[in-house]
Image 1 (cartoon, rainbow, N blue to C red):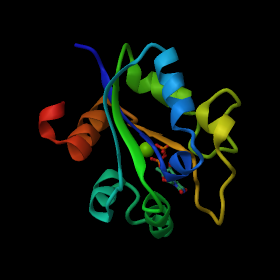
Image 2: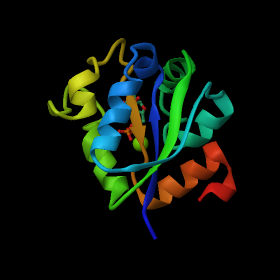
Image 3: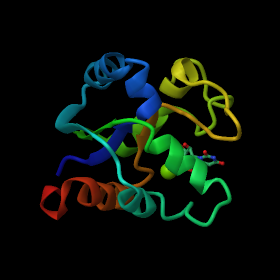
Length: 141
Ligand code: UDP
Ligand code: MG
C-alpha cells in the first residue's frame, strides 16, 4: 500500500502566495496529490491537531497564528512520503532549517517567540492516519 501523509501550508505561506511554489516542489519530488482544500482551521481542530502542545505557555500564540487566515490542507502519497516530506520541510525552527528546505528557504526567524514556519507535515505514519482522519474524515485513510 502506498504511504500517505497529511500536509499543510500554514496561514503565512498562503498569505505570502507560496502555494504554487510549494505544490510545485511536491509534484517535482514525484508525490501524488490525493486531497487538497483551502479552509479556515478552527480552535477545536487545532487543539486536537496540536494536542502535544496545548499545555505549553505559547499555545495561545500558536492558535493566533494558525487562525490568522486560511490554510491549504492536503494528503500526498508516495514512497516513504512521511519521512521524505519532513526532510523537504526542514527543521521546526527556521533558524535551524537548512537552505534548500522549504522552511530554510522561505521561513522567517521566530517573531515574538512564535515560530511561523510556512508548512506542516505529519511526523509518523500513525500521526498521518490520525491527522488525515481529523481534517478530512475517517473514511479517507
Ligand atoms: N511551535 C512554536 N514554538 C515552539 C514549538 C512549536 O511556535 O517552541 C509551533 C510551530 O509553528 C511548530 C508547531 O508549533 O511548527 C508544532 O510544533 P512541533 O514540535 O510539532 O513541530 P513540527 O512538527 O511542526 O516541526
Ligand atoms: Mg509536529
